[in-house]
Image (cartoon, rainbow, N blue to C red):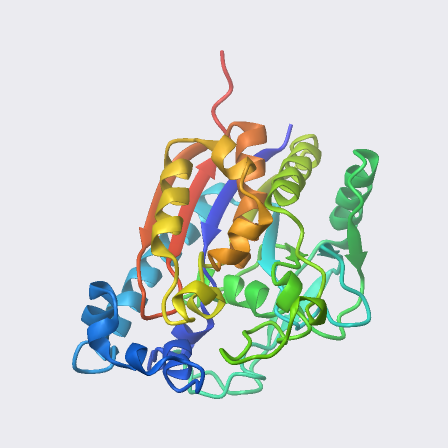
Length: 352
């Protein structure tokens, strides 16, 4: 029987910049469609005003990044202690790998090596002072990925797969690897990216970001929706079932922040839905997987929690295998686009 480690983390792109700025927030402030009253800090929630302060979030940005680095190191320590044979990463694709030619709800990338180019499309100087052409070669495992695909098909879960490397893996995958290697000691564990079409209706029409507040697009202009939270939960359970029957030690990682400001239309894209995030976090803390299993897609979209679909996959695996919670943390922010959750779950010891 395979051993399973469950990890949850964030891949927030902006924290790799030397100077952490509230980019999404500032873009929303400049959006012509934002009501004038919302440009005044007096109209903002208290937490947002405190983080913005009198330095436009500079001090809050340093504290936010420090909190995330601490959590990345906790996750890496758990990963090294577990010493996996394989690391499967659920990550959202924001019109990077998944584009008009084929839009699957889920896609496993089966390669023996992934060449990561994180700074190819990232212009600010990064915190490691790595050059724009820096590449990271990370092992994959095509054979194990193909076996996983076959196991899922045998369980009547119709999963897509790809051998191509033409478009890379997307930032949700390469940032996961880079942040787990924040201290640059190397990352040699073979990875299996599992891309999730979290952005659904906004994938092609908005190129995986957001629409302007005064957008005139109507429902028929949008794309078909993302897979439901329940289906993501089922995928996590199915993957856990297949891998637990192997002889591999496998780490399953959900990589994404939770509700995103630039997806939370009800808050005018200014700040995320922290209340909904906290409610889901408490359900996770108490092992209330019925709450997770029963969330509907419209609720996810209304709360700006599209990227949480990666975490629904992890929740399905945790529930299916009865993994034990070892660490759980939530880094709250309203200014820096999205709250971040972190988790460590392990296979319980065998009963005597």
